[in-house]
Amino acid sequence: MAVSEVGGVADVRRYVVIGAGAVGGAVAAQLVGDGHEVVLVARGEHGRRIAADGLVVRRPTGVDRIRLDVVLDPDDLTLSPGDLLVLATKAQDAELALREWQSRPVSGGGLAADLPVFTVQNGLATESAALRRFARVYGVTIAIAASYLVAGEIVSPSLPPAVGGIWLGRYPSGIDDLAEAVVGDLRSSGFAAWAVDDVRQVKAAKLLANVANGLDLLDGSDGDRARARELLRDEAVAAFAAAGLRPSPGGLDFHGVPFRVEPVPGHVPGRLSTWQSAARGASTETDFLNGEIVLLGRLHGVPTPLNAGVQRLLADPFLPRTLTALLTAAPVDRVRVAG
Image (tube, rainbow, N blue to C red; front, top):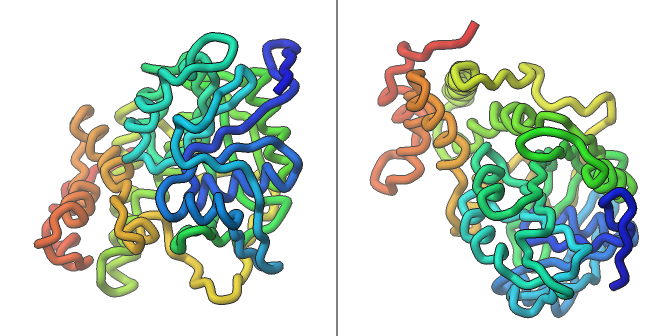
């Protein structure tokens, strides 16, 4: 692949998407559909089916089968200087993936650690882990209703101009030419996308909603669910304020671009990523969602009993997974909300 650079940005980019779940699959499918060069790194039966038959994408408009380059093992891929690594694993798997990829050779000299890496995880932990190993880290926040439950396929229930919303920028801060170029590729591929100067604040805004993900795995009434969601968010706001993070209380800003979740035949909407992981028998990212709030609270002296309760309930198979257990076990009257 011939690569030239103008202003430090390769005019031919290949996206190496590491992880083929709902997010990685949707990003790869949209980029391929727009004519961009993509390699999808996918493991297990999911990867084998995609390699053999293409990635099945179920949409409101019908079913697409996306043919793309797939590798089942990183050893099967030769990296090039124009490659962009898109780390689309779950947060709990990111550390292992970063360690696995950092020392892979790049044709013509150098290592993968010299390439830009885009971290698409929920929470706040992956970017600092990546920066230990990679010189150019771009934090990415994505809001998308995609799901992955069946090997070889994903469901993508939103349509352009916003298959999903994506906000990205250099970590720890800044916008450069590459960030702008990738945003342009994502927009032309059907995403609503923006380059942001402080991606950590945007990730915190997403986390304000993500702290309620684990509630999908707890039984209880709608009233208790709403109360727990509010208390979890209040704890997060307080912990963020103590840590110097003040994300927009209005959440992620789509700048007026309509983002709609449409019906997909045979698909039950509203099942968030934590529920999807549990349904597949995989580990969940609770330690990087609620656990992030617990960590910030412990570092800065802010009580976070509800978030600690969710973390504990989902970690211990012998505890009752009910909203009643969560709300009665945690001293919620001790929650301190930032003003």
